[in-house]
Amino acid sequence: MEPLKHECGVAMIRLLKPLEYYQQKYGTWMYGLNKLYLLMEKQHNRGQEGAGLACTKLHAAPGEEYMFRERALGSGAITEIFQNVQQNFKGIAPEKLSDARWAEENLPFAGEIYMGHLRYSTTGKSGLTYVHPFLRRNNWRAKNLCLCGNFNLTNVDEVFQEITAKGQHPRIYSDTYIMLELIGHRLDRESERLYNIACERKLEGVAITEFIEKNIDIANILRTSTPMFDGGYVLCGFNGSGEMFSMRDPWGIRPAFWYRDDEVLVVASERPVIQTTFDLEADQIQELQPGQAITVRKSGEVSLTQILEPKQLKACSFERIYFSRGSDRDIYRERKALGEQLTAQITEAIAGDLEHTVFSFIPNTAEVAFYGMLDGFKKELNEQKVDYLYELMQDHMPSKEELRSVLHNYVRSEKVAIKDIKLRTFITEGNSRNDLAAHVYDITYGSLEPFVDNLVIIDDSIVRGTTLRESILRILDRLHPKKIVLVSSCPQVRYPDYYGIDMAHMEEFIAFRAAIELHRDRGTMSIIDDIYARCKAQENLPSVEMKNYVTGVYDPFTDEEIAEKMVQMLRPSGVTTPIQIVFQSLEGLHKACPDHPGDWYFSGDYPTPGGVRLVNKAFIDYYESR
Image (cartoon, rainbow, N blue to C red; front, side, top):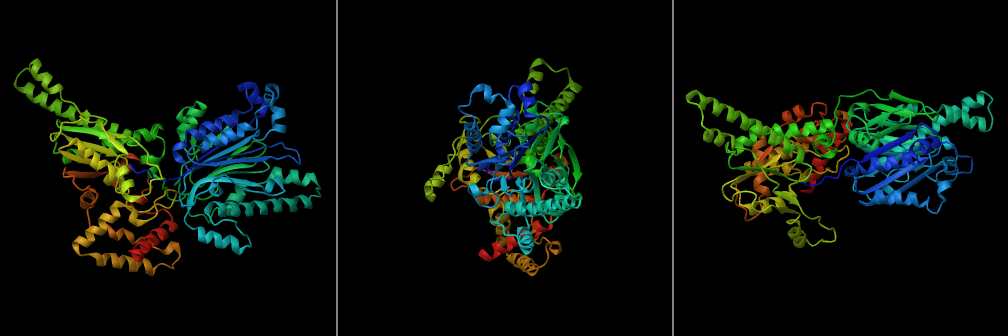
């Protein structure tokens, strides 16, 4: 309903054969470049603020460029960067362009390693400077580093202090640059370690370089650089000599999948994009495990290495509810389950009146949960029909008319809400913007019987409530339903996320604002004062010693009480139709998504110490700025 700016998308390809192989088999040495384009386009949902790609050649001669990068801003960035790459190939005779060896020796982006990134800002920082991949340059090929990732660190301050204490001077204060410098520092030390060994072995000149490039241990670099990272991440990178890696955080917060055959190794943020791009079955694709890295040496040797000990699994459940593509086999099933599990609560909300209820959804991400909700009511209605017919047959053989009257009952569904326009940011004046916001969605007139039919409409989440208040509720009211039942396929979003989603401030959440209003109504604001005092008292403690006291905001209230207060706060002026909000329970969430237990935005159960520290800070900031 209200698009969240969230974690980014990554894609990597390592060609395991010479470029001539792909030219001969697939008719183009650009096989890897073309596949990267598909992987990025099919993950477009993960980032529309910018995109970048990078490439390296494994066999460049001294004096020749071997690392290349293109970056661009905006929702059309993917198209722009690939058009820019293709400009390098314009005007070249077809026979030359189809000569893979000539291309590798003479053309940029004719290499064996490709890496792409799709960006959504999670820090509010924007501009080309912050678009991945990032480069760290050096005259030693092995010391060059290119890095991108889907991540957000919660302890940037600590890591910054650590690396500056060693004499480093990062050019930009951001988690990506700090990661780049920390991993780059360990890459330097690894190169120097190998340099010393080469000297001890009496190697000289180019032989030293070849020894370093042949023996760099990326796994060792990751072991010594990543233990400080607190947060959710999937890191992807390569160095100038051709060592490539992808690593997942030890809590498994952010997702990563990989596939390998004798031609290619590929890594991406989502499984179905690899399936579609390479025409694979789901079972052929592996999930990178928490704390694990997949590495490829310059020689093409692929390894899976446990870099960090796995922590308690906290894979992000919002990936399953909203962020990842619903075309994934398991995600599709889980989203349907999220909808179906709400059948009993919705039945209570409509007082069992299926005959006079129309079901619909908020486009477009809630569509799969909508199908699950319909399945639940179809099953319930079928059971009602069976019971009715069974009782009828105990008395007499039903007539055709009686059978027809029973079987004619069905679950009514319509596409009631239509996403119509996208507001343009040049509209800044408040009243004008609010008036136009009311028209972001449109409705299908005549889709229900006025003042007779209930309208049940499902969304994947209710976060800020802005679109509900400014557009959706007002426009749904034009249909004059007897009652509007808003259904959220996930629980109430109560807490900020610090692992890749742009939700950082307490006052953003309608659930939090509703809880505060309930405290005001009941004269219990002293509880809020006490929570502030507790948070403030531990402000200078180490993160590992902190507790999440913000959960106390919600403790006095039931989910239903908070939902009822939300309705009061979100009801547009002039709308008198009865409204009820039905939320998924935490138990229902975990039942539907058993392998993704990360639920901190709903429960406050943060998987890392940094998350606990930041949620307390968010509450302090809220309290002090009231």
